[in-house]
Image 1 (cartoon, one colour):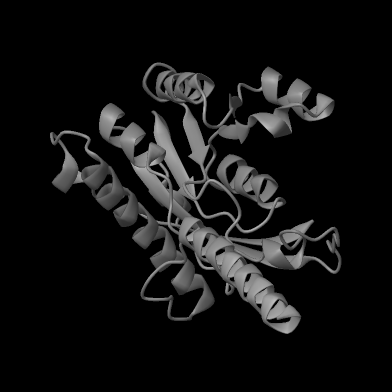
Image 2: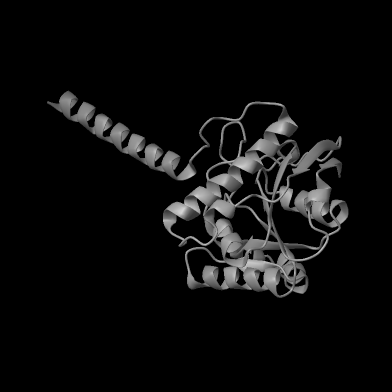
Length: 237
């Protein structure tokens, strides 16, 4: 369905537990990420998936039979899911795919955003290598937030896997919020660097912060509402 180009597949260990940390462009890209890992790197892909996705009967059936890990955000189930991921990595030697951003990027130019710290915590807790993977092209097949699915003509989708992210500066330190944030930023810098190589473009100096953008949008909406109310009051006076 795509014209795949796979770079850096030799950076993915042939065996043993490994964390695959990838950027998230489209709801279509889990298929291309799985294809890259299974065919390109010869590793069975294990995803951490949103619980809402697992509620779809067909997805639930396939995911359950292939060892995929559901995550229900903001609950004790999320802790349980991370524990299951830890077991998959350390006990079973699985290759577990994570989207550190937690959702598709909202950056206007589709660069990786700031990320959640769970992946960094898992890597530092287990000592399992974390392979940064960037990809580009799925947005032309199924853009985020749109229903237009355009598989044909087949689109070029490029993957670029880097060597393990060096987190040695954080090893042995207490997993404070600062340590986890800095480790997460190191992971995302590598993913962004790899995507910049694919795109042959310069990434933004500061990644898009979805949480901050939402807060600013809410504040702007409140200001607009107050200004509208003030305008009405002055007119009535």
